[in-house]
Length: 126
Image 1: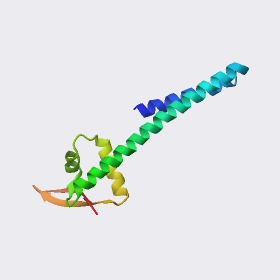
Image 2: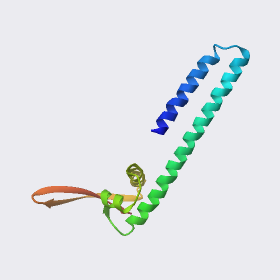
Image 3: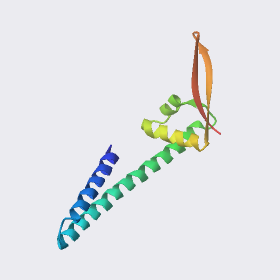
Image 4: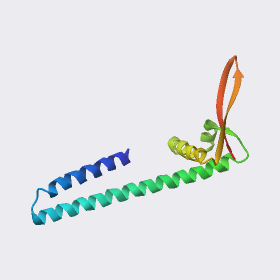
């Protein structure tokens, strides 16, 4: 949510600033341009920092997933409950990236209960 707001604010500031730069005279043009560049640098810095924090958190959760799955096979729900107090989207992203890199394997297990055929996807460390 905050990332989207910062992106929209950065875009609005840059467009508004650049439009006013072309309509102002000498000294005002330099001042407005410097203000616009300052805002762009600040918002870009905030966005880069948030991206870095998110990547660090995902790497940390991936490490916890590897530790949790060592010598075990778990469903996503079991894995999510093992990782206490981690946001669902972060666990989902970390697991997806690990499966995509083929560091974690997955398979679908089919079984029958009460006449219904059910399938469950299980994850394990390869």
